[in-house]
Length: 141
Image (cartoon, rainbow, N blue to C red; front, side):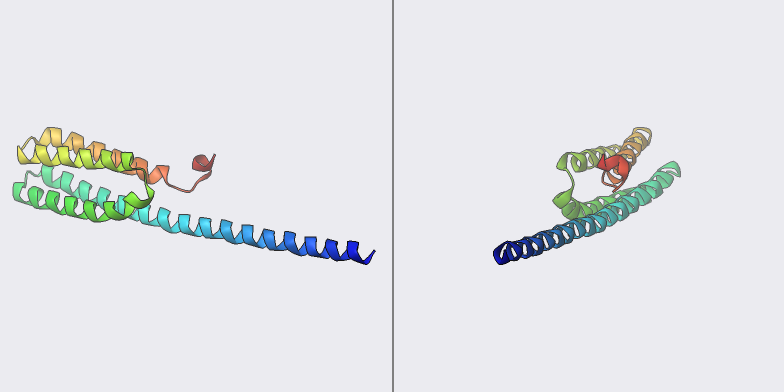
């Protein structure tokens, strides 16, 4: 009878330990996801804000400011890209990269109307990325 009681206590401790380990793993995953989501959301908002500023400069046809702003956006994007590429699908990031390259090309040839279309596509993809990696019930299920 003593042996049976001893095994029951051991099994109880083992189950308790497994529950704690599972809880720690889940809490760690949720915490890391929260930080990554926050970085993603802030990065996308920052680049979208810069693109909106660029759109205003294009509308005002301030060529020098547009070219400087485009260079700044590309530099900022490459900085964000380095970190985002660690945890976001490369296909998504490459869409933004392609749209920004097209936008830069249209700005160089001063085709601002088509450039604004590419700018809007870039904003759409950035918003899509932010929404896709948002921790919500829609994305979980």
